[in-house]
Length: 579
Image (tube, rainbow, N blue to C red; front, side):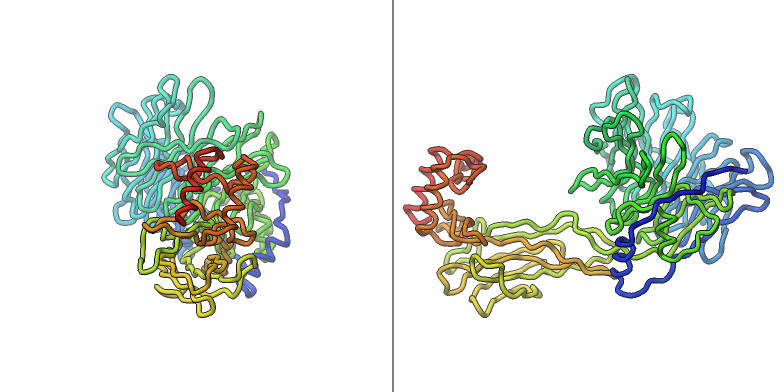
């Protein structure tokens, strides 16, 4: 019998739990804990990995035969318990397709990686030509593609190991290594694959002189591997899983500390690699699985060198919390249980599986019914400038403004944009939803065309100022909505700038608009001249950039970060001709 420390002690804050309860507006159902049980005659089951559907799990355990040959992978469902046993000795399933119909893993007795599916049974996978063995760590929907590695010799060695993606006919593709790797025959391994099989993640040795790896992302049809780097100050990283939508990755990276330095991370192209931290009192964490859109990650946190570990749950709403005490705080009965590691999470983030101990006995587990994850904003809309086209014109350079947002949250996500119009120098006026291809403000007379008012990216064009000589202050905002909550977007100001005859913005329009009067206002007047002269006298674009109007861009008529004679000449010319 295994003896383990069951005294994990990390509690999520009441504020976190309250926020999750409040997100759905009503009292939530209590999460349910499922013991996956044992194979006939078995003594243990372990490492449950839940499919994207949240109800199907793969795990492995022993049978009455004893020894490695008695170990079997199995498929389990909430409705029926154990439904299938993979008929292969020493079969340790490490992955399940998001749809729950295929399992992949490795068999020590067969000396090979395998995948199993309900319609097709067991398929042993071939290593790359000349290699001796292989192992698999991920499988896509319908077992269309499997990922893992091919090993030329000793399976414990990384030398020459290669990340591989197999198709369901067992044909391998060598994914190579990251560009810039050095040393003697550096290796690589694929650890996770997207639902459609088009994206593979894993690690590639960066140098063999010291232990240093790089997390990678590879995309079909031919890659190459993209080096994801490390956390700040880090020397090594590994990617372990990719979201179903291909947009987010989790894994581990060191962060520059001398020892015990690994941290679970979340990577998205728009925000880079983010350190998820550790549970209180711990000094290492490992990101093992990620949900459908990257808003939830699970794994384990460790106190080294004591060896005590605990499963964690991280979401954009909760941050990192210990799985056991989080579920307990939601009303789930955890008597006798210690959750050692979390190895799988459903696409919606409400089901988590892994390895646990019940009264000291190793058991695979599944938790269902965790709270819905509300939306979160990764990249908010940013302020931008639009040029009002000349009278009678509907377009031209600079006459389109785009506001975009990148958000997470269990889908489907819905977007609703709005506009706020107020007097210059004020906080704004009434907020009006953008609900169609044209907007017209009855108060100021301002009107413009709209595209994408219910998508992540809204486009404003053909702006027609009203009869007022000074355009009003305009800001764009909105909300992101999912089944459990609505989140407001930060507002971004839309600056209207004076227009040249060809439809472009005038570089001499530098002041009179915005909440402080230091933004373009769509007209050329004394405010612009005074602002330019004051800024030019200061001579530092970092302190006051109003006079930085030229010297950059391909035409020399864009800001270049400095204030000099080219700015003075360009401004005087533009101001003199009123353009």
